[in-house]
Length: 175
Image (cartoon, rainbow, N blue to C red):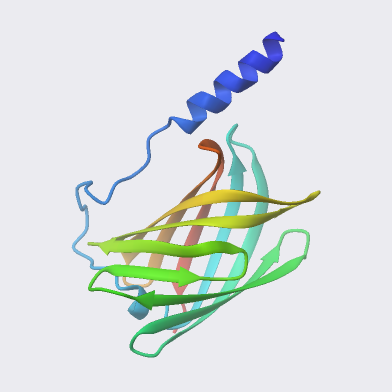
């Protein structure tokens, strides 16, 4: 019983850890425009880390983006450390000066996000594949443009309000 109580306490505390805000001070003069950054070819490298800090999965993503003036389509081809692959196609629609909505296979309903300064916050629920099938999780994605051709992404993953882990990705524009 003590082990279960300790585990529940750790999970609760992990879920309460702070996250960024679009109201945080902008530490850069860069203005992130998703349609500019992701149009063309981008490569990304990342990992999934559980709440205990253990890196559980490594991956590379090749992204081909196309902007038609209103919709950004991103074809993401993932290759994991075990050589398994996955493709996700995002369709993002710009619905205001700084606001976006989007969808992809596995996303429940619609994702929504907002750009501000060099930052972008993107939220959605996702059917995350697992060893035993899949589970519905919530992604709270944060992106910061670091240079003209580099973007850092940190995604907080939770289920029922309890943080399960984080994904960290570095994107690099290659054209």
